[in-house]
Length: 566
Image 1 (cartoon, rainbow, N blue to C red):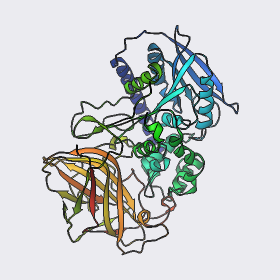
Image 2 (cartoon, rainbow, N blue to C red):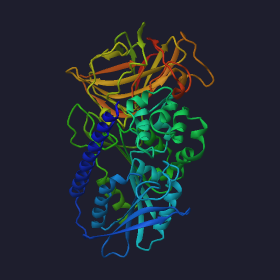
Image 3 (spheres, rainbow, N blue to C red):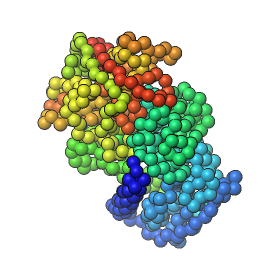
Image 4 (cartoon, rainbow, N blue to C red):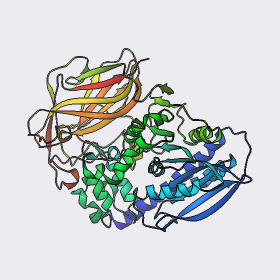
C-alpha cells in the first residue's frame, strides 16, 4: 500500500468513526427518551478535577451532580477512550436529571490524564484510589460501577476490593478470562487482539491490517510494520497455552481470580456474537456462589457494539441497549436499596424471545449425536472418509463469526455460501427435521482425522439450512491436533488423531423443516491466525506448507448437541 493509499484509508476510517459516534449519540438519546421516568427532574452541575493517585500521577475526572441535592447515589465509570466524550456528556445530563451523580475518569496516559499508557495493568491501583476518593465524598450516598468492554475491565479490575459505599456493578461485553479472549486451541484471535493492538499502540499505526495479521514470523510484525516493539503484544502472541506462566501469574491471573472473591452483586451482560462471550460466560461461572445468588446474567443477540447481527429475519424483542438495564439494576440497588435475586435470561435464536432459565449452563435434558456420512449428517455412523487440501496461503475468509472485532461486519449469523463452496471446505447436511431441535449449551464437533504434516488445524461451522435452501451459521470454532493431544505427546504424520472443536455456548431452536449443515475446513481468517502446518508456537513460524487432510467417518466423527426441552 502506498503512502497516498494509506492516507486515503486513514481518512476513510476517520469518517467511519465519526459516523459511528454520531449514530451512537443518537442511539443513547433515543434510549434515554424511551425509558419512563416520573420522579423529580434535576438540572446538571458539572465539575472537572485532576485527581491524584497514590504515586502522584493525576487523572482527568469529570463529575456531574444533580442540582439542589446535597447527597445522592453516584454511578461511575473509567475509560481509556476519550473520543467517546460525547456519550459521557449524554450520560451526565440524563443521569443527573434522574437524581444520580455521574463520574467518568480517563485512564492513565489517555486523553487529558497524566502518566504512561499501558493497557490493563494500572487499572487496579488507579481504580482503587479513585473509588476510595469517591467513597470519602459526603455527597456520594452510595455508588454503582458500570461500563462496557474496556470500561467493564476497569470495573472487574477492582470488583473484589471495592469500598463500602459500592453496592453493585453492571459490566457488559467483557470477561476476566483473558486467555479465552485471546486463544482457541493454540490459535490467536487476530481480529480481536491484533486489531486492538494496532489501534491502541500508543502511537499511530498505518500498516494494513490484513497484511499485519499474515506477516511471518508474526513476532516481528510490530518492528517491521508498526513502528516499534509492543512488549505487551509480544507477551500475548507467545503465551499460547493456558498453563503458560504469563497467564498463571501477575495481572491476568489476578483478574481471573477476581470473580470468585467479589462480594457485591454483578449484572453481567453479553451476547452470542460478542468476541468476549466465551470469557464472560467463564466469568459468570467463576462468581462466588453467594454472590451469584444476587447477580444477574443476560445473554442477547448482537455484536460487540450492541448492533443487530443476523441476516435471516426481523427481531422485534432484541433489547439491545444497556441504558434501560443500567437504570433497572441501579434503581433497584441504589434507590430502592434492595438486594437482587438471581436471574438468568437468554435470547432464544429463531424464536425472537427472551427465556428465563434456572441457571447457566442450563440443565441438559438429553444429548443428540449426528454422525458424519459421506455428504450427510445421520443418526447412525457411516464408513468412509472425506479429504481436502489445505494451503495456508489461501485461507478461508471469516464470514459469520463469533470472535471478530476489527472486521465486525462479519460477526453474527449470516447467509453462508453453497455446500462445498471451496475445494478446502467439505460439507455434511442432515435430512429435514420433523420437529424443533432446542439446542442450549455447548456444541461440540468430534473428528477422527489424519494429515501428512506434524501439526495442523481443523475448523467446524454448524448452520441451519432453511426450507428454501438458505443456510445461516449457528456456531463455529477451531482446533489443532497438537492442542488435543495428551500433554507431552507429539503427532506423527499419517496417524489417526482425535480432535474436538468446542464451540461457544448457544441457545438456538432449529425449526421443523430445516436441515443442519456442518462445514469442516482448516482455516477461518482473520478470526483466527492461519496455521502454518508446522508444529510449534504460531507466532514464531516463518513459512507455511500445504497439508493433505483426511476426515475418517464412523463412530469417532460426530456433532454433539446439548438439548434443553421444556
